[in-house]
Image 1: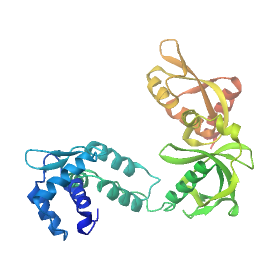
Image 2: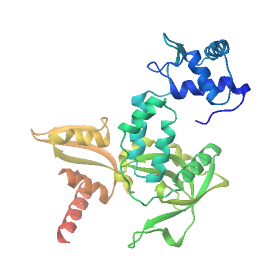
Image 3: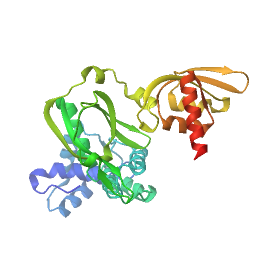
Length: 321
C-alpha cells in the first residue's frame, strides 16, 4: 500500500504501518513507529505516537497495546481465509493466468507483511490455459449494472472453431436479454437471463460474452425471472446444458447414493429397490449431458417410458458409431 505523505496525514501513515507490518508476533513500539515515519519523511515524537494510538482506538480501529508495542488485533480476513480466497481464484478456470496473478497480488496486500510472505511461500497458483477472455470482469460489471438498474443488456456470444479460436456465434448476432442472476457451475461462470427472442430463460457462459452493454430499456420477463431459484437451476442443468425440464426416475447402485445426493440435493425422493439398487426421482433438464452423466456412473432412466427409450437410443447411437 503506498504511503500518504505529509505531516497532516501522520496518523494515516501510522495506521498503514500497523496494517502492513504488525501482528501479535510483530509489535511496534513508539520509538520504532517514529523511525518508520521518519523513513517516510514525517517527523514524530513518542508522545504524539501515544496520542495517535489512543485516537485510533477511540475511532474503533482494533489497535492492541501489547507488552512490546502496538499491533492490529484482528483483520477482515484471517490467514486461513486468505489462503482459501487465493486457492479459489487459482482454481477458477474462467479467470486467465494474468488476471489470476493480479488478483492474488491484490489479496496479499490486505494481509500483514508476515502473512503476505507466508501466502507467497505456501500458495501455489496453477498454470492455466493461455487463452481466456480478459474482458470477463468488464462483462460481469455490466451484468451487475443491469441488475442494479433493472435494465436489459446486449452482447455478442462466442464459440470455439476448428482452428482453436473464439469467433462470434451466428456471424456476430447481437443478443438482447434481461439478466436474472450470475451463477457458478461446473467450474464456469454463467449469466442466467430471460431471452427476448425465444421468450424463455437461457444461460450463457460469461467468458464467452463480448461487447457487453447496458441498454436503456427496462428488463422484461418478470414472471419467468421471478420463478427462478438459482440453486434449483444449477441442480437441474447438468453441466449447464439446456434441455426440456422433466421429472424422471433413475436407478443406480446403492453405493452411489452419495454421488447422486451431491449432484441433485438431499431433498430428492429416494427409495431402495431390493438390496443393491436405489431409485431416485429428480427434476432435471433432459439433455445428452444428463445421459452422459448417468452413463458415467452406471445409472439408468427407468421412468417415464418415453425418457427411458430416449436414453437407450442415446447409448445405442454411441455404440453404433
